[in-house]
Length: 332
Ligand SMILES: [Mn+2]
Image (tube, rainbow, N blue to C red; front, top):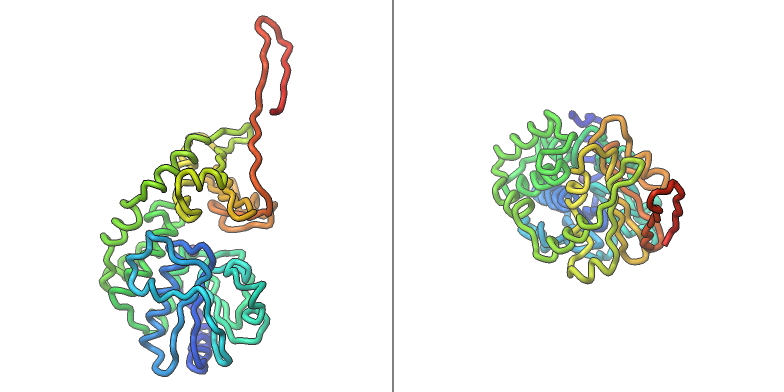
């Protein structure tokens, strides 16, 4: 996945003329968000001699990623200054950063900005946009960019970037795990990425509250006539398990494991909104189109949406009289 020379040059120009570089990733950050934020940020810190580099995200990194070098430097709020250049990572549109309403000046041309992302739905809201829909993760694009521009990647940076490559491919298990992904993994391992540290922290560690939350998620799976494996998590489930929203990450793969299903979905309540996560294993189903019906988006096999509202349980009961065809259906 070569980065076009023109875009790489444009990025260099913006970075070199910046007074300060502020790297930003999306709210509720996942491994790719945190990995690309810390990965690119730490590279820029080394190559930019004069400019300070700031790491910025509205939400703190989930505990899972607290092992990553530099994670404590991520700032929830930043005083934006004249001459700042912004680098947006893994954010398909301004609202996903959570900064669009309070700080519209970040997105209206007041500042120079660079957008690096792999979501095909990216609205290209920067002055320079590197959107590679074929990349499985934003970290993969950061590696390609670094190699294109001859930026060095040390073992701490490689560990951050490999984390994003791992998490966005579900540990190299999802269908987006291309030959380029494996090449990127090899390249990062050669730079000293601490692969076992990632595996232990991300895939072999689970808080008790996570396991309890997942128990609730799995117990409530229902199969619909349309071939969906669907489950829902209420604010009450989060409270009862003591888990944070971010601890839901990964549970969808188990919901998606029910054989013979067309798609799977987790609906989760959070702060007055209902978030939907959709997955499919099938090539002939496009869950990003399904998410699009609810103003969401994503990839063909993994997508999501967010609606204002809350979940209301609906139990469907059917009374079947014995020795009789007469059926009575009620909604409760
Ligand atoms: Mn990503």
